[in-house]
Amino acid sequence: MSSSVLKIDNLHVSVEGTPILKGVNLEIRSGEVHALMGPNGSGKSTLAYALAGHPRYEITDGNIEIDGAGLLELDPCERARLGLFLAFQYPVTIPGVKVADFLRHAISNVRNPERREGEELVPMREFRKELRSRMQELDMDAEFARRYLNEGFSGGEKKRMEILQLAMLAPKFAVLDETDSGLDSDAVRVVSEGLAKLSGPGMGVLIITHHERLLEYNIPQFTHVMLAGRIVETGDAALAHELHSNGYAGVRERHPDAAAEETEALAGQS
Ligand SMILES: Nc1ncnc2c1ncn2[C@@H]1O[C@H](COP(=O)(O)OP(=O)(O)O)[C@@H](O)[C@H]1O
Ligand SMILES: [Mg+2]
Image (cartoon, rainbow, N blue to C red; front, side, top):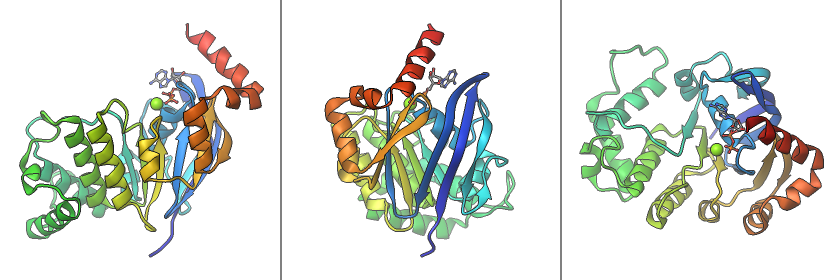
């Protein structure tokens, strides 16, 4: 299995003219699990949206690369083709589209770089076979694929959908931005166990979370702490544990300059 690297280099991102990320450096390799933590407003989601290629997040400096190929000029779909997968807290509902149809389009888009809207999809037989075996591996009921995407889904079902999408797309890098927030414990278990099942030597994972559960199932080799738009500390799973227990007061004390910038940014918003 080939090894890949997602490299974020001196990334500066502004939103509506306000600088939010101020030089983020992060390298994730295949097989690694990284946790990204930090207080609300520190810029974690901004990093996730910048990786996704959201048009509101303007890259003013720095670079993002997968195996040396720059991402900044690419649209979100092209980034997905390079092997990037992002999951956010609120999944989309597309009226009238079934789970299976959505997944067939998604994998067709990602696997065939020449494909244009309306062109051929992954052949139905092949797709069905693949979908069935992924669903079996994840202990999912076949009926689920015939449901309408996210319509009337429980929190747990939305997470099952996300995990199934991850299984079908088999990305090189998966970024999960608080995908476990606001869920009941059953749903948190679905996403925690599902991710643990799917991650392995071929995938690098970045988990943005406030919960411990997701990181108990998916133990990070690296924990990064963001404060005021920069990664100010990197440690291992013990750091994640410490932050869960004690919060960010210690981080702010160790990084007074960043803490002052945080206070300043908050004052600017009110
Ligand atoms: N779309 C946006 N429009 C305006 N401000 C934004 C937007 N996204 C983020 N911000 C601002 O950027 C800062 C970082 O936010 P965010 O990346 O969501 O932090 P986190 O995910 O760590 O809580 C905050 O001050 C927030 O108000
Ligand atoms: Mg966020």
